[in-house]
Image (cartoon, rainbow, N blue to C red):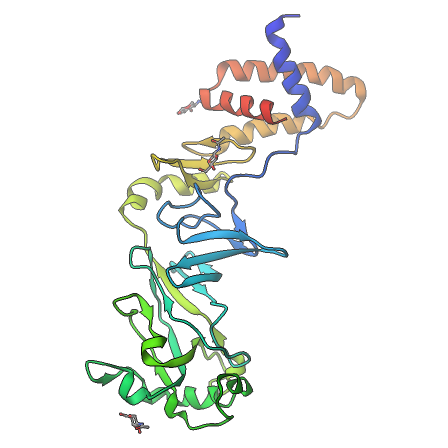
Length: 322
Ligand SMILES: *[C@@H]1O[C@H](CO)[C@@H](O)[C@H](O)[C@H]1NC(C)=O
Ligand SMILES: *[C@@H]1O[C@H](CO)[C@@H](O)[C@H](O)[C@H]1NC(C)=O
Ligand SMILES: *[C@@H]1O[C@H](CO)[C@@H](O)[C@H](O)[C@H]1NC(C)=O
């Protein structure tokens, strides 16, 4: 036998015996129950480089959680709308009707790609809303929505904030900011408020706060880097089953396929190689298996000789890992 053929036969044997096994992909398209697509990523090198310092997939005991980290803390992302470019975070220290607790300030980083969406905050147990919750002497509280306060103050959980049930609502403030302050924060400390309940929607139950939806809506924006570099290539990559990422330090676009295989375009060459491996794995009898091994060795040899450098790198990589 031609000695040069031997490595490819061995490679084919390894691929043949373990066709479905591949190392954990560097970038995943899901985190917990959330679909993770560009510009979000599950880790370094995945998604958009502008999002990476802020959003990452954290491995938990039971499940993975996509987490947004800012200068004030880390907040679980509970949903993403790719059509409206928005997401919802549920800070663990926010209050709802069933659970109220004191909270530190909630903040976003100005340098990041996130800004406040259309959120309504019910600020709870503030020292003197009418005098301290002002901007340029105007109260920030929406007195027309004070019915939300009355509803929240009827939740038994209010006791946890040191208030009696149905206490007067003059320590409560309904605040719907267009943006956070110059520090990028919901400044509960300055306003001397204990907690906040971010109300997403009252749904069909405007007077039953136990059935409202809670969470902080954020919008995300994509910068010049993304539109020039990624937005055209990424859909092609995702359509071929890949995950969009970037190289470092060049920040060049990378399409991350399975099995540790990266391309600058899409996963179709990788999918074809997987197809060869799968079809060669489906011969049943032992004889067929061996003759088929010779066949896949030849196919792989021919493929490795004729194909691109990137495809050859894939073979090499799989060979080492096996
Ligand atoms: C593929 O790209 C991902 C994301 O950038 C990176 O983490 C991984 O190391 C790359 N794999 C290879 C084999 O270059
Ligand atoms: C706070 O101000 C609003 C409107 O300016 C007023 O209706 C309300 O009675 C004030 N509350 C207190 C406790 O002064
Ligand atoms: C080789 O790579 C180039 C770009 O890198 C691509 O246009 C071409 O289709 C590839 N050829 C094969 C056989 O994969």
